[in-house]
Image (cartoon, rainbow, N blue to C red; front, side, top):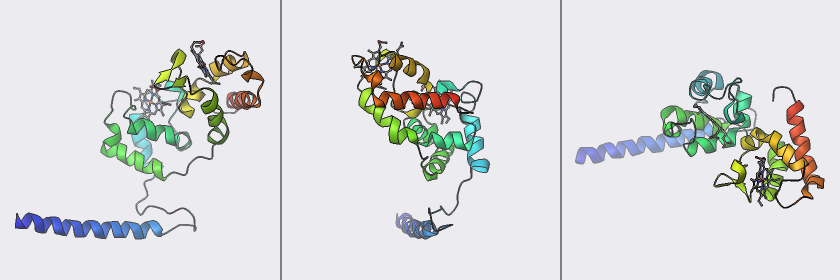
Amino acid sequence: MKNFRGYAFVKSLLLVASVGFNGWALSQTTDGGTPVPALALSWEADIKPIVIDTCGGCHNAADASGGVILETQDQVVKLKSSIITVLNEGRMPLGDPGFGSSEEGKKFLEWLSAQPDPVSYYDSTIKPIITANCLKCHTRTKAKGGYAFDTQAQVEAARRIIASEVSRGSMPQGNRNFKNSPEAKLLLNWIKALETSPGS
Ligand code: HEC
Ligand code: HEC
């Protein structure tokens, strides 16, 4: 028992030392900007193999399950918040709810969290429109017509049917004037831009 306590004490000293070291390392910056972790994980060497292995079977250019392609760093970082959500909730990879807490899953989450938040027109402009006009009836727990629009990936995946419903005035249900509003115009223009921009 004595030995065990001694061991625990040494261990806690080591823990304090390593936390102290991390704190020091995190305060160093490359260009006076964002702090960089001491042992930065790299996309190419550490993360890409995990993503291709674990997600690539369903989220490649040919299959694009749920409208999501996860092959490049850009594609992954763009969906940072959706991916963090589905990993933490154990919803992805489909059929493997333990992945988020596995060694590799934790590595992926650590790397993702350190990525800059994508500057997103969706978050600043489109998401508030969806929230105000659609979420009352279209969330994961209350998906009228089978559609949930909690995340950008869901909205992007359903963009064609959204454009068609909104432009003919059938959605939001019970508000036939929405189609003439500035918000509807922003939403429809955003969808049109997704359709015409290369690589989407
Ligand atoms: C066996 C197939 C399969 C695998 C493997 C898989 N996915 Fe998916 N994924 C799907 C399907 C199907 C959907 C669309 C339906 C859904 O949302 O459940 C989806 C949807 C998603 C979405 C959008 C969900 C939302 O709520 O917007 C994200 C993000 C995602 N997957 C991330 C991942 C990540 C990250 C991995 C790897 C760790 C992964 N997926 C592995 C099949 C898969
Ligand atoms: C008051 C509730 C309500 C609101 C608000 C609402 N919807 Fe719906 N939505 C429904 C119901 C109910 C259905 C399923 C029955 C139907 O298709 O009319 C549906 C179905 C849909 C469908 C599938 C249509 C199809 O033919 O399968 C889409 C796409 C859709 N909604 C998009 C939207 C969008 C985009 C918004 C916001 C701009 C929105 N909805 C706001 C209730 C709502």
